[in-house]
Length: 265
Ligand code: ATR
Image (tube, rainbow, N blue to C red; front, side, top):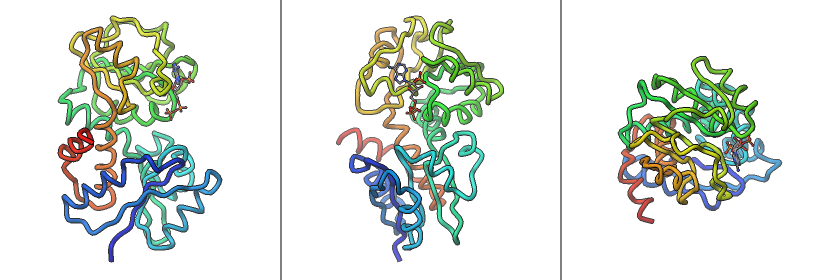
């Protein structure tokens, strides 16, 4: 019998996940189906439980349900616990296992696809919301020389950084020196808002990474004019999906052809 999976969100029609997982399944010969599933805003748990009861094997979770998925899970991986959010649920014998593959996807894109070794580097994360939180532990595991979290609301960055030994927090006025890798985990780009970044925040030839994909954000433009190399979040999207696919199927799909296909579309 074909195993069923889904991405649950609201809205969800725009999601690229069904396409990505269909390509992974074809490539690896896995007998599975993956659909987009719209959940009512007040009915996430009901939607997920019904899918599991009907034989579904797992779901990816997207906006705005990742924190609810965290609470619904009966077990959590350490990286889901650190993220405070879940993007991957697996159903097994009445248990609901929660994982978070977003941060691993980010690191896989930066290290694997873009070829940037994070060890010993000065790494900057902009933002202190859910997207930033999910990135902290996987980034720290890469042993950077420094991990700094900067947020418009400085208190949130202090609080977030305080949860992770080896991480520093602050506001934009606390920024000093150049970073080898600067990651924009704010949602500012979605409203075309620029961040108050000093031009020398980007080390020459360093990497500026925006988790948003498919648009040239003010952050990417700032970085480019400062001489940094830039990347959007499409690779992270594909890599977090590959990691979820591995969690479910125990098989690692090749991401490069899938990323190329999405770029072309
Ligand atoms: P997500 O789950 O995408 O991280 P979120 O939890 O709502 O979304 O967090 C949004 C992040 O983007 C926050 O860090 C927010 O900063 P504040 O905590 O100060 O609100 C940041 N953000 C959004 N718009 C921004 C802007 N125009 N300038 C700077 N930061 C912005």
